[in-house]
Image (spheres, rainbow, N blue to C red):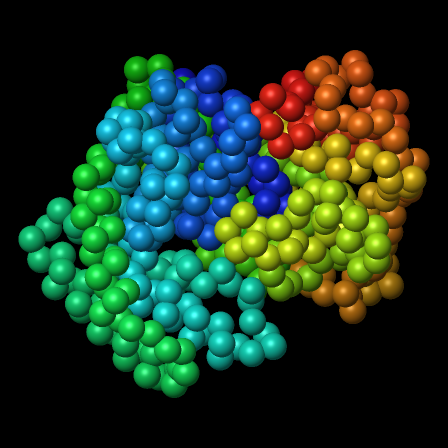
Length: 423
């Protein structure tokens, strides 16, 4: 059997959580492969809304097993709070949820370093969620980090103290003015660690590959989006992990030849949270309306998302580097009622028209070139199949498919899991 990957093709917030939830019934295992609690995957069903930050989005399906892979970084405090907010008994989670021993742990001092580093940048700040993600990945690549498996060792607190003291020296170097009570932060942290230790720690690469050998199906769930990839995103305004398909291999210990379908999710328009270039961003009433109608606020931070037209240059780039085989379009319903719509099909870059994503897409270097479409008035949220789509909406979908060269297999017309149409 093979592994399918589901990931975002824009700057995150594409709606991955909803689609994983919808697709979970087809899979035996849902495995998160990168990122940390800076992710916010929102699920809506049976009149309830759930926001997941660390736990894979298949957790509400009783038959599915959920794996937090080695590429993920885990904050025990946020993990504990997430469990409490979901409102299910721990025994239910313990049967469905497995955590890689090779996943790294976010310490309280990682969060302090994140805040100090961001404050030092001033106007050049990245727009970090201040969850300690970057400093944790820095310790991982610097070979200093603490991992889940270390919690099973007798000297893990000694290891913790060593890393904490290193962080405190770095905070002195930053000459940080942030105020904190480390004793209080540690009290909450150690309580959360005890909760974390009650879950199943596994050698996840063995668990997943053994599952494949006996015919189990796996969906690898990504966080953030391809344009936030630390290598291929809009650096330095990116996250600290590999959000692209290759990250599923390194974040789960699965060989590339085990990958079958790569499912890429994008919005019918574009959004971005935090700082960084955004060629199709709208600063007018149209952009404000997109944000209002689409309820575009960060699931983790609550920050308003910047909104703009769909960028096919960036989308084709993401399809290319991920090897996307199927597309999933979200929030087409948000565009209902707009008299005219635009899609960016190329850039003017250094005086030439190009159709690929260049090294630098800051506004002084890139001017988007648009194709304009007539909008549709119909409300899409109550539709049940693709035959009911308005003709102009069908034209919008077909234009994207023809431009990118990959079929759109699922269209979401609302936030609930039932508002999902298979093409």
